[in-house]
Length: 192
Image (cartoon, rainbow, N blue to C red; front, side, top):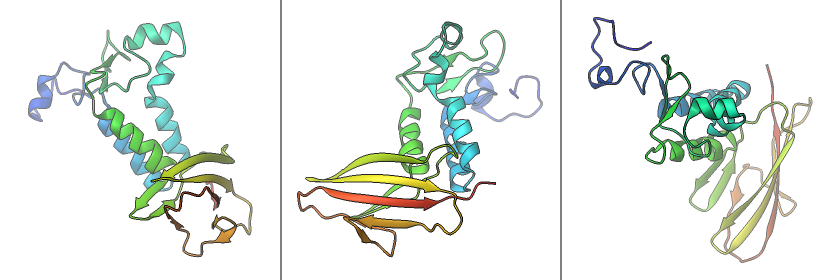
C-alpha cells in the first residue's frame, strides 16, 4: 500500500510515485530477502513459488508480458510498479544490485552452497518436483562433479560421499590436487 494518502510519513520513501519502489511497489531487494527467509525457514514450496513470481524471465514469456514489463526480461529490475496505469512495469534495470542478491538467493539459499574456507557444505531447499540436480564446482585447479538427489521416502537419511567415501560430518573437504572428484549428496526432504 503506497504512502500517498496516509498521515504516516516514512521519510524519503514517500517521495517516490505511489506504487514505485518501496512506496507500494515490488522493491526487488526486499522481495529477494523474503524468498531467502522462506528458504531459511524450510518452506521450500513457498520459496520457489515466490522466486517464480520475481524471476524476470517469467515476465518475457509472452508478447503481452513483454509489453507490460517494458524492460529487458533477462535483467533483474530493481523494482516493479504496482499502481495503475503502470502495474507490472519494471524499472531501474542494469543499475540494480538486485541481480547480485538474486544470484545469492539461487546459489546459496535454494541450491544451498556454503563455502567455509576449504570446506563446501550443500544444504539445498528444493521444490517437491525436483529429484536431482548436478553442478560442477571448481576449487582452484580441481573440479568437483556434484550430484544432489532428493528423496522424501521413509528411512532415507542425508548422506554425503566424496569419491565413494561417506563424509560423516556432511561436509565436502576441498583439496587442490588437480584431480576430478565425484560427490554424491542424498537429501531427505519432508514436505508438508
